[in-house]
Image (cartoon, rainbow, N blue to C red):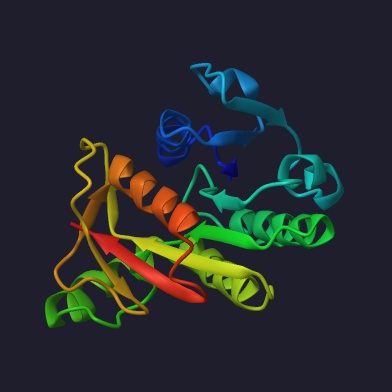
Length: 210
């Protein structure tokens, strides 16, 4: 299938691009800086463009079977609208090109449904103070996605690590994975690809963690 990846130079995005190409999918990687994307592949097309300009994004999403967004700000302790602005532009471009399948990454930290008492009452309040602006941006992003009218899936991973791919992780729909505090970026990439290829869950938030 044809997959467009936004945030392709990030920690998760690079792994997602590699896994998708190795699985035989045609991948369009949308980047701000081509020099940050290493590794060529016959099935990979790289597009450098302004992700906040929906008109510029049209060629990148045209003909895609699925669009996956792993974008996020480089800093997490200052006010930001990076995710919200980018996803809004991506959605407008997808509508214009008649592309319907969207997978977007946020984080398990922005909700507490499914969490145990220790996580809900101790860990999450601390994270919400430290990552306040990033979490606010994620919540706004989720609202934009939910109102998009597209066939969407929001993926909420736990804390991301640089651990290896295992293919073994737990999933929970519209609630967090109980006791699941982390997941490797490689396994998150695996989950994102599965969501795009398998087509679900639709109109739902999927938590993923070990």
